[in-house]
Image (cartoon, rainbow, N blue to C red; front, side):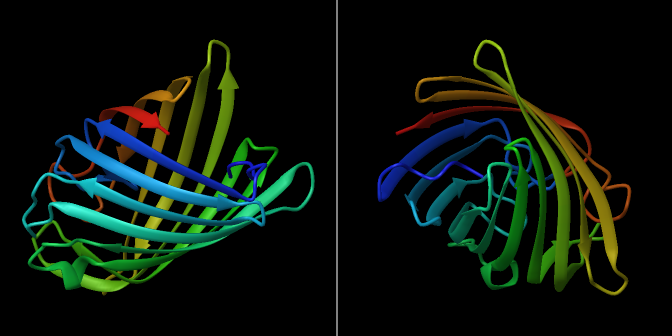
Length: 222
């Protein structure tokens, strides 16, 4: 969790270019490049609001844009422990099947010494396209464990492992993981990530949308 701002209000804007857009080990931009914009507000009480927009490569459902709104409350319990709870609504404006793919997410996270992260999310209704191209709607949840380590020369290493379960009939689950090396200089950040998932082998996703892949991102913050 980011440290609380020193001032009562803290506004921020970030722009990012990425070679892909991957969420929990599955690409949402069909393996193509994406562009994103995030606008956020933080208050020293721990409240935060984020608005996001991601330009995607058009997929079978006609999704070109993903818009999201997130509200969160964070806490710092002592020198070592912090955490947050958040609610997110994501939508796909312009998609012919947006009502099927729009979703809500309730998530929580605990952080120890700013290095170890454990998090979980619940989705009241989540859609997925099976390997046989069928569309299923059901509740879902995910859980993950992550590590952040600062390195010399303005570098940082992030690694994580997680599991995602879609409670359709029959229920399907898969595992995902990532390793990310980042470099920060002033408002600029560069990321090189390796992402892996067994979603395809578990019959969870269509061919080519999961598996192992490299991802590069350039981000500018204001």
